[in-house]
Image (cartoon, one colour):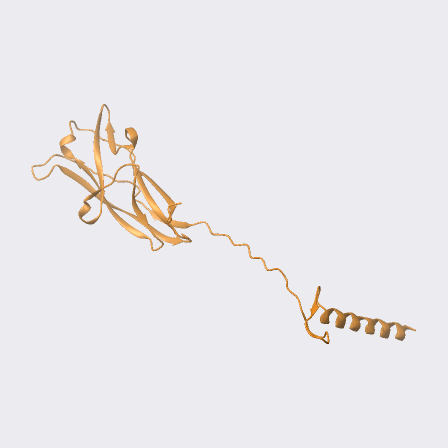
Length: 180
């Protein structure tokens, strides 16, 4: 009895395997004898665009010391670099760099008690291109970039001995290359 039950179970299992492997769900026969079948299944792919990432290196501070008016030049300056590297997943975007100062309307100014002096930021070959506070002044693509900059002060503005301070704010953002 036990042997008949095992044989019956084994035969049933083989029949089920044969039937399910030969006849896929919703299969239609494509020939007159009915021994070839085809079926289709839906394929769906959900895609996501990764979040762009990049590394920006800026100076920890910009310091001009012992600035005085001289006969040779009325301009004191300090050079610095903004470096954008390790750029990943821009997906038809670019990185924009915006600088603002701590003065009124984001102006590039430094203040001491009762006095302010303006400074300029320039970039480009020979530091000839002025940066306008609040405007994007550089666009960086997926290759990254090192952007040379120069902060300069016209020393003829200095009216007293003091320490002038302010903040130079850096803003970085990704923007679409297509303008949308």
